[in-house]
Image 1 (tube, rainbow, N blue to C red):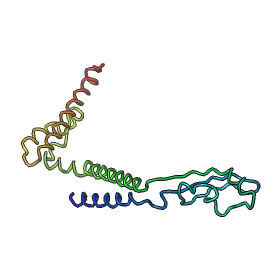
Image 2 (cartoon, one colour):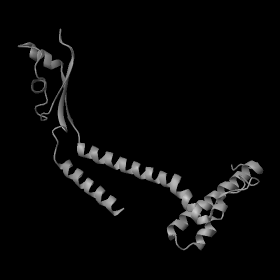
Image 3 (tube, one colour):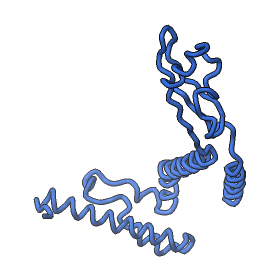
Length: 185
C-alpha cells in the first residue's frame, strides 16, 4: 500500500511540474475560412501568440493572390485557443485511479468476502434449510460471532454491526409489507 502511495505521489509530482511549462500544443490559433469563389472552405491551425492570431499569420499557404487576400481574410474567423494539458492529465489519472480502486473493491466483494465469511462463520451457517429460505438472513448472528472474535479490527466490527442492523431493518420492513400488508406513509 505504501509503494502504491509512493508511485501515485511521484506521478502527481511529475505531472504538476509539467503543468508549469506551457506545451506548444496548449496554445493555438484556429481560423475557419468559408468557401470563396472556386476555393473550398478550410480550417487552419497554427501555434502562434495571441497578437498574431489573424488570417495573415495563420493561413499558410494563402489560397488567393494579390488583392483577393484582404477579401478572403475578412471572411475568415480566427479564434485563439488555450488549454492546460497538465490539468487534463491529472484529472484523467485521478479518474482512472478511483476507477481502479472501485474495481479492486468489487473484486474483494465478489471473490474474497464470501471466502472470509465462510472461514469466520463456518460453512454450516451459510446454508439455509428449505423451510426458512427468505425468512432469515444467512448472516443474522454475524454480530455475535464478530463480537467474540478479537482478531478483527474494531472498525470492521462496527461496519459489520451496521450491516447487520440494516439487514434486520430490511427484513422487518419486508415482513411489514408482505405479511402484514402495512406500508409506511
